[in-house]
Length: 288
Ligand SMILES: [Zn+2]
Ligand SMILES: [Zn+2]
Image 1 (cartoon, rainbow, N blue to C red):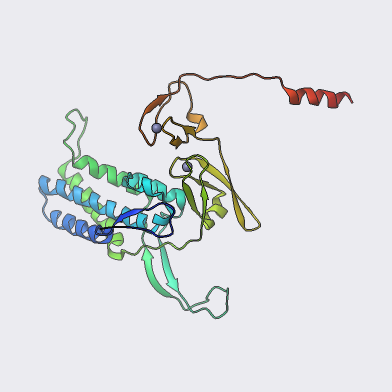
Image 2 (cartoon, rainbow, N blue to C red):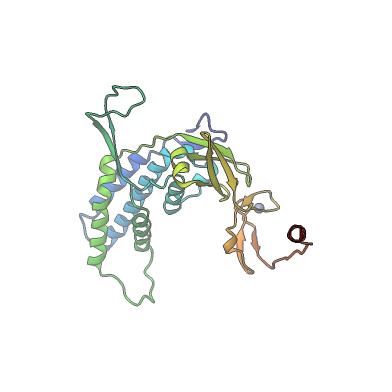
């Protein structure tokens, strides 16, 4: 069954039958039962289930930020890239925090308590997530016959059991939440909406279009945000725009169009010379 979010200018397709919360628990239990045995075959399957568990945890977090992520990119992300995107929209996406409510006695004033905890949102650290996800990936592939050293069966088993333990708090809590006020504007590069959280804009003074990669500087004037694009993105014949960081542009640099995947290569640089009118005006000023 498919559905899409009302209110978002472009439909975001969500498979309502795929529930990351359910899958996270299912994969965790399967890994736990497989690690009760210690033969190589069970370990390989345990690595697969742990990887699936991490994926479900990340997709669960992705779902709560769904409103801030471009619909056509969400479907292409693997957990490491998905987590990078989460950190781009919310630098605190990797901080574990507790949600609590308390009675409000005065309008517009923060409650002084007592507070009742609603839940703890456990967030994995990006560095740990990428390292663990890649390491688990190595364990499900055929061994490289030319490796200088290979980990012992015990080392692998210890790593898998440690990972299971580390995943336990995310699976046990299963609570995810994000409260935010968002600002939307249209990207000058690709024309798609860029959604950013107000608190992040205030703190970072910048945002990025997650569709084409164009970075923006954000300025708040009288409670309204204004956005200024860094150098414009490069446009392919198919019409899709992709931002290329200027420091990466050198002869021989290759890039693929994000839409039609056609490959391009930087083959040269062109210098243009024109009369320096400003310098001429400067001289006149100094003579006076
Ligand atoms: Zn864009
Ligand atoms: Zn293209």
